[in-house]
Image (cartoon, rainbow, N blue to C red; front, side):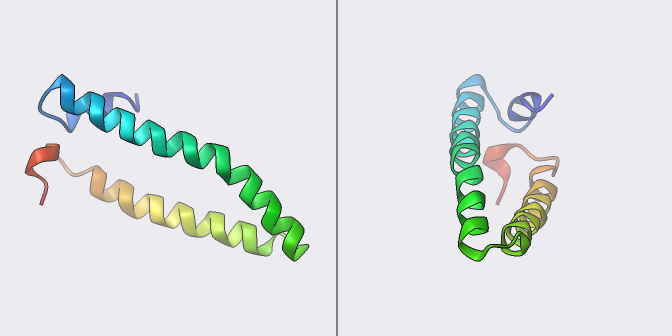
Length: 79
């Protein structure tokens, strides 16, 4: 279902491929770095407070960005 959104927000297959590639690159980068970063912060602070607050902040940020991405507009008409 998530891959469907790339097609809904673009005018053609080329734009959909570019958007999908960008989103997947960023997603995989965060998925690779995230656990190590959270583990490092836990080890450095000897607490789960900072890592969990960072995850909470990221969740709020993703919610706000998701609201913007859910607008019923094509990619090239967004301003």
